[in-house]
Length: 123
Image 1 (cartoon, rainbow, N blue to C red):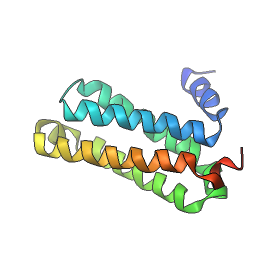
Image 2: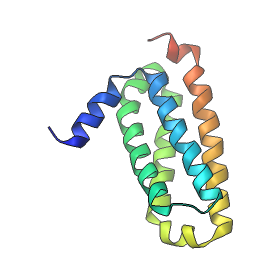
Image 3: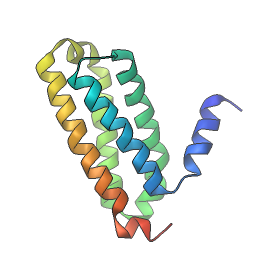
C-alpha cells in the first residue's frame, strides 16, 4: 500500500465531525501563515492536503447534508484556484491578506458545520 492510501484509510476511519475538525485546523494554519507571509511550501502542502480531505469527506456528507457538502466542494474549488495562481498570490501582500480572511471565514463555517446536530446524529 502507498503512503497516500494509508493516509486516506486512516482519515476515513474518522467520523465526519472529526474530519471537518482536521480541515478547519488546516485552514487555521493557512490563515496564520498567509497573514504572516511565512513558509510558502507549508501553505501549498496544507492546501493540497485540504483538497484531499474534502474529496474524502464529501461522498459521505452529501447523504447527510447536501448543502454542507456543496460548501466543501466550493472550498475545494477555491483552494484549486489559489494553487493555480499561487506565484502571483504569494508576492502580493494584499491578496495574501484576502486569502487569509477567506480561510478564516471558511474555517468558521466548517467549525459550525462540525457541530451541526444533523451531521453529528449520524455518528
